[in-house]
Length: 581
Image (cartoon, rainbow, N blue to C red; front, side):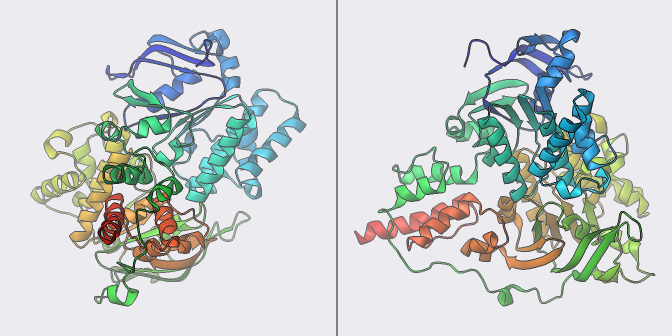
């Protein structure tokens, strides 16, 4: 670290109106050209710290300086803003113009740049983020992931030497995330200093340095390898390591040759060679015909198409054709690129949109009919949107969760029982949270309360749009476990996700949507057995599946959806090899 860091954070303490410090004597120095990842559980202070770097927030105690300029000095405000670009977690917070290209131009225009230079910067930024063809579209007609790309494009157009990203890829699909990370890597290699707040452990591997926050303090720093080596400590901090690193840690205990801090599939497979012998297959993906539910699907979508703003000059295709079904008690993941039509499908499942073309039969209700029983659909198909905290509108938690049961005309005793059920299903104590103000909740707690409100109606189908976006790894895993518990109770779960590791954890089947139409449907075990199926649809193969692929290519058959399952399969092969020798 240089003696004169580009960003210097000295013993900073900050609190909001609650009186509880969000940052507590934080000190951190960032040199020019460094790629720093900020990690921490929900509520640890990461976003608050990020907002101090360009002076959006000012320390109550301590000092933040950028290139030697104190952020509290009003005379430096514009100079600091010229140096530091910021991309927020929720892109709607920074979109201000009526078209995509005007929004990207907003920052450069405020710095009074030459119009020709502004045009060149806007075009370059839109091309880099894949939005060039959408330059005249109103931002409110973009998908969540496209809005996130727009926010990034706005920062790129400023060409600032410091880029601060606050969960800036949380709504992007794997392909889009890799595109953005490649762009950020390239900017960093060209000299841009990057500070990235993230919950995606795979993204942390891109960084030079990692700083981990807990309860407003920096508690760990080091390279990604050094930090991920501290498995137990990270779990204590409500964090986790990438699945491939978990595999390395578990294997190291039995096969010391495998480094405990390995973070690449090739690194692990190379150390396993010679320890394992080729053997016959131990497990095959169950055939679809053996796993079909014989009671009939709860939801059937056939030849569904949808055009937004139909009949107007702004009309554009949202969905060309979608076909899918959902059986009782199963989890179906819908995956696809940003803007491919996933959310459009989801909002047809409980009648928010009615079919313009094709059909949707959900919980025995044909939504194509004018007299469709929408009230029944809304009771039995619960919907959680991409930003579920926006579904909260009451002042107290208990009042918000009780809204659905009250609207269903349940008696007060039943309402109270439903509120208790909903809160306990998401891991919130009824007596502790029922009278808590909504504004006093953390982001993760708000998500849980929104889900509790849906569960209070005890739906037959739960429809979730990016349910874990913005949650720290442990909170996300906890939510997935609770959804798995709902499956056991017979609830069907349909969820949109960009995280293929979540698919491995929860889903029974995967429906792939690309360019506004359904491209394929697979059992998850099929994808684990043959990861090339994922690659054939343009998705990056998760590292835990790439390791299995590498081992199979060497004649070593292994199978595992989780690190524990995969390691058990590998060790089984190790035992076979040892006994044969």
